[in-house]
Image 1 (cartoon, rainbow, N blue to C red):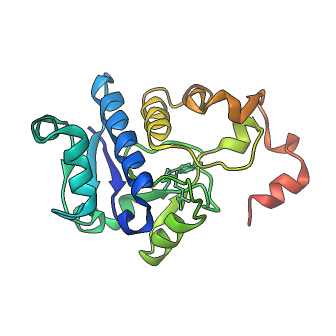
Image 2: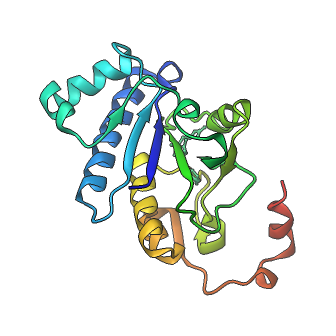
Amino acid sequence: GQPLVFDMSYASAMARRELENTVHQLMEVESWNRRDTEPYNLHLCNLQADGTYQKELLKQYGADVWDRMLINSSDKHYIDLFPREQLVYLTADSPNILRTFDHSKVYIIGALVDRSSQPGLSLANAKRLNLATARLPLDQYLHWQIGAKNLTLDQMMRIMLSIKETGKWEEALKFVPKRKFDGFHHERTQQEIPQNRVKGNYR
Ligand code: SAM
């Protein structure tokens, strides 16, 4: 299957509760993926052996379950596992919009929760590594209701499974929680998008 990377390099950027929360979300990620007919080949990268993350994973799963899970985990960096030009870091703060899903790319998701809201953290990381970045086309398809466009890891997983299988954002973005938006746009063309929005895309 197509690889999908979770970047586990944010342990030190999170409080205890947030780390526990992230691990909980990763359990859901693994389970949505495993139950899918076309699962991704999941990679947890930058996972330090005996680090706080690894300890929390083992605590929440138990060693035997963890060993049986369909996840590749290692302390290796994704830039050492995949060709750089194949990597695309997904981040809500990217100036680029992910319009079409590319089956030849390796998408990266930052394994962190945003409770304490650290905007631009994963974008800064991707920039430092000189990687391509993209955000989900939320504004293009949804009437957005409330501020933050950061989705949880399990929501990201379901969206990424759906877009891989259907190629349709109308389908994939059904996994954005309903409280966050007020319906889908209907076949919005570029001309229909108000001028200020179009400008906004070039931020
Ligand atoms: N402030 C954090 C950051 O710097 O990315 C937000 C973390 S978000 C809760 C967890 C991860 O999900 C992000 O690192 C990103 O990979 C992915 N993600 C969440 N919402 C996204 C969006 N709208 N577009 C692209 N990726 C998104």
